[in-house]
Length: 100
Image (cartoon, rainbow, N blue to C red; front, side):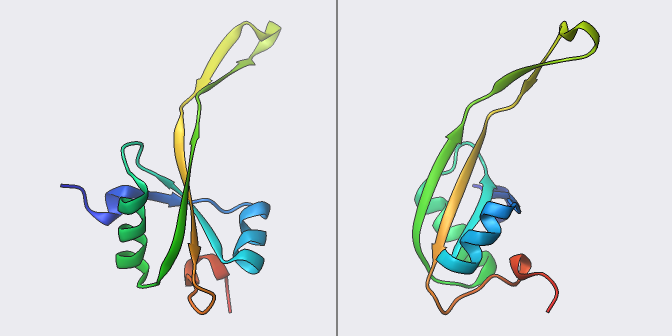
């Protein structure tokens, strides 16, 4: 049995996610690769005590890049699963809001 803290790995804080928080009430998280939409919804609702309206899941594939002198060294980034959670307009997650 996984706990809500095992499902939600860490938040995604970028310029795009800050825009989504301000205008669209959407929050982005990196989640466990075996989690489903209902598991993510339950985890966010229990951890942050908010009402979730919708959950979108994005599977990002593993990517290769070249590194080093002569670009001979191949590096592989791991695949990950990202969840974008839409909250009701009156709910907020204080972690994303910054210093107030």
